[in-house]
Image 1 (cartoon, rainbow, N blue to C red):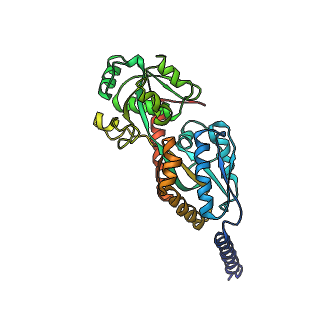
Image 2: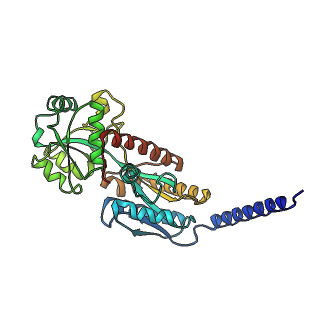
Image 3: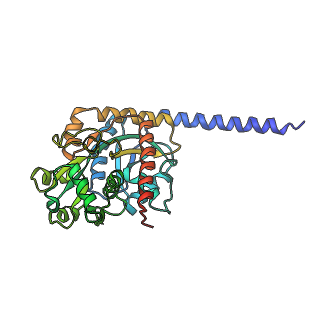
Length: 329
């Protein structure tokens, strides 16, 4: 009989129990210092705004300062990779968006797995997307007319985006695939040049977030045909959803943002973070003062809710990208 095996098993079991006890002890003491919230985009943008809006009230609930650190580059992949490499002690968080679950279907060299290397904390907010047309399609007033026109003019309807593989681009591909129309994609370097291109007639249509384009919609310079959402939105109460108008259930695109931590972060820490985040998101003052002015809608829910949305969207966008043959490598 080999006596070493039971001894080895006992040693390993003891070590695992000791490690678990240390992790539990740390989780009980957490947070014991400032928490770093990494924003993988440059200061001043929408991601940065939302992170800073959440950081202060979340820090107050946790009893520690939440410090914003911007690590931009590679459309968010540099900062997100940094978060994945940090100790899983609850002291480093990352802000991610729907763009991060699109990337794996576009790039071959991502140094992390967005679904496996992170533990979701919780979603924060979303903003609705809407199909708009500019003066070049001024005669189009409904989604049905848009689809009929596009079918009658295959390859002639141009739609702009903020870049290849962006949510703007994939929203157009989603509509094209669902309705069987052939449209011509025109990418721009970011969303800034897209608005003047729409207004000037250089492109005919676009799928855009409501916020930055609302003034032009309200002024009548752009016509909002339908929301890529499950329900109408308060910012555009008269605009129906594309699903309603086209009798479909697959024209939904949720542009969300949320918090993640390194994958092995203790579950008790994740639960505490999520609990305090829910308190912040359900505060009417936070919603009215911080979210609504930027056309964000709160998205309260559990860590598992966020994981489910990440997985669902990753699969949906992969399907869109593969069927459309989109590549940026």
